[in-house]
Every structure is written in structure tokens, then in C-alpha cells.
Image 1 (cartoon, one colour):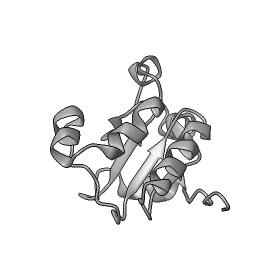
Image 2 (cartoon, rainbow, N blue to C red):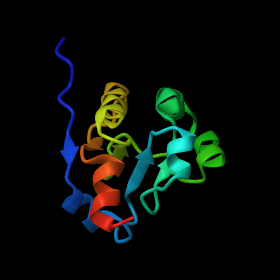
Image 3 (cartoon, helix red, strand yellow):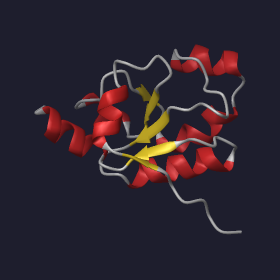
Length: 119
């Protein structure tokens, strides 16, 4: 079976969703040390090693741990990102494998976001 093709979202597309969409779940899969240096507003930190376990949680457990509602499998705005793009792609593939049909990776990652936002 071929591995799923990771779906991408651009800076412009993500920028349009951040702060405007009630449905966006932006998952930051970087390490705590990376997140402590800066983050995309509204993102939820779920380290790459925890993504599969997090997506397998019951909704109540997910909300208790991460403070947000667990996305439905057909959630239209589930986006993963890391520092440079690779881990976000891995997390997106993991989400697709467990049934998240619209999961996307922000390929530009935090590096592009911080450059564009001047932070």
C-alpha cells in the first residue's frame, strides 16, 4: 500500500485561518524547548512522539490534557506544524493513517511563520 501523500497548507492559507476560524486546530509538534522560544498564536502543543497516542484518546481525555476539543475524523481544518516542516509531515501522515481525512501540514513551519511575522 502506498503511503498517503501529505497534504500541505501554505502560509497565506494558514494566516487566513488563524484567529478567524473557530474550527482550526493547529497542532505544534515541536519540542517544549522549541515552543518556549515562540509559537503560532492559537496552536496546541502535542509533541511529535505523542501525536498517535493523543489522536487515539477518548474526546474527554484529549480535552482534559490539551484544553481543546478533539477533532472529528472529518475535521476540515486540522493542521500540523513543526520548526522546518519534516516532523509536521510525519504527524500529518500519522493523523491520516488513523482516519483524519483532511489533516494537513504547514510545510513552511514555524521558521517561515516567524520570518513572515517578524518575530
